[in-house]
Image (cartoon, rainbow, N blue to C red; front, side, top):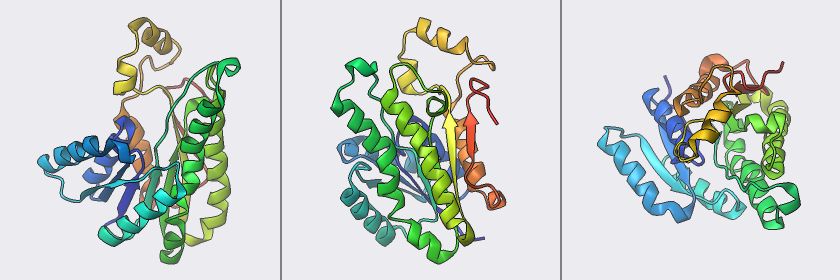
Length: 249
């Protein structure tokens, strides 16, 4: 069986790291993207995986907000690692504020990274996937892109746009054995959420039917499933991983 190569943007973050580790366990060659200013953290992340025995793991600096940076990153990855046939767009930020107090900078930063970043990265690899007649693309959205969230007009708009991007691109590349899907996590137990006040966490969990936050590994499982060979008939879909927090059909 051909060894697949996966590139995960935001790959050294909480969810991104779990996705990388899941792919490694499944025999993929894995490239974790990170923003250039996190060089030291990325090197430590890579060293940890190497110490744990992973050999087919690499890191690649690239600012998803910059087309040129993504172009340079892709050229380096193709030269040093090889063809990327599996892409997970996981990089994202939040800049929360009620709309009346939201600045232009806060709006633009979230839209540029969380939404335009999909174009900047995916554009670098889609033609190669087309030429090879195979590709798996998974875009990480959010439950708040489906239901909206107080204080997150920028984030909710960007994450809703992620699935619009998914549905349109899925139609364009379907005949070339390339699938494009969205995974929309709910609240996930990452380092970022773990530092939140306990009363806030309790309030969030009280609205989740399953009664807890997701573990990053549970989001990673959903991503891996959509990238399997057997998932070749699933495209343009949005898979919610939210513990029943938001239900739709």
